Image (cartoon, rainbow, N blue to C red; front, side, top):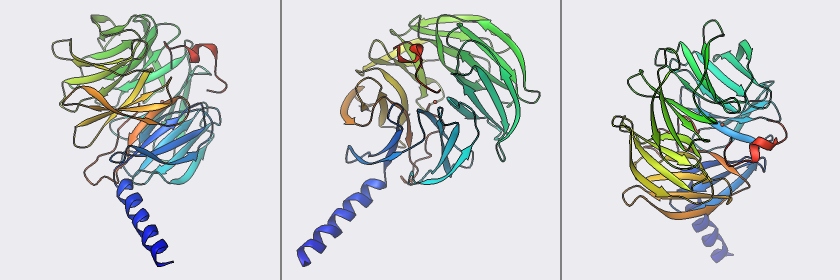
Length: 339
C-alpha cells in the first residue's frame, strides 16, 4: 500500500507539471477537445463539446476561452488556465468563426452553413444585428479602431466589410478563388487574404477591398498565425502540406516548413520556440521547432483537429488570441480547399 501511495503521488506530480504547459485542441469531427502536454508531448485528457467545434478565442480579459460549436448553436466557455468547463452560452446560431474587436466592445460570429454574420455587444453577448450574405462566410479580421470587421466568403470568392456600430454592409468585392484566412497588418493599412484556391496571398486595401498585391506561397494557402515580431506571419498551405513564413513588409516567403496532413490552425508557444499546427487529415498535432524550421514531434488527437490554443497555466503564456473557427458537413467542408 505504501508503494502504491508513493507511485500515485509521483503520477500526480507528473500530471500536475504537465498541466502547467498545456495546449488545447478542438477535434471538429469528434465533438471533443483534447488537452495536451507541451513538455510531455502526450494527450492528457479528452472532453466532449457540443458538435462540430471548429474555432476558439480568448475573451478580452484573458480569463476564459470560447469554443464555438456550430451544430449545437452554442459557445462553450472554458477556463483559460486549465481548459475546464465553466458554462455554456446558448442560442448563438451556427457559430463557425468568432472574434472580439480590439476594443473589446464587439463580438462577431459567422454562420458558414447558414450564410449570415452576427454582431453582438460583447458584454452579455446581446445580439446587435444579423446580416445575411451569400457565399459561405468564413474567417474574419478587424481594423484597429474597432469600426469594421472584414469577412471572407469562400464560395463566392469575395471579401466583405461590415460596419460594427450600424451592423450594415460597407462593401463586398471579389478578391480571388476560395478566400479563407484574413488578417489586418500592424500598420492598419493592408489586409492579407489567403486564397486557398489560388495557392497564395493577396494584399487588399481596407478602404474599398481593391487588390494591391499578390504572393504565391503553396498549394491550398489557408490560415495565418503571427510570429510575434509585427512583421512575419505563418501561413498554412493545406493541400501542399507546408507552412510558409511570410515577410509582410517585403511580401516574400522567408521560409518553408514541411507539415504533412493538411496543416490548418496554429499557435506559438510563449517562449517563441515552437509552433503547434493541427493536421486535419491525420488526427495529429505537429510541433515545429522554429530554430530548425522542422517538425520535431507529432501528437495523436481526435478526428479532424482544427483550432489550437496555448493555455495560460504556463505562467509566461498570454494564451492564444485567436485560432484561428455548421450543422452537418456539407460537401464543400470536406474538400482540402475549404473550412
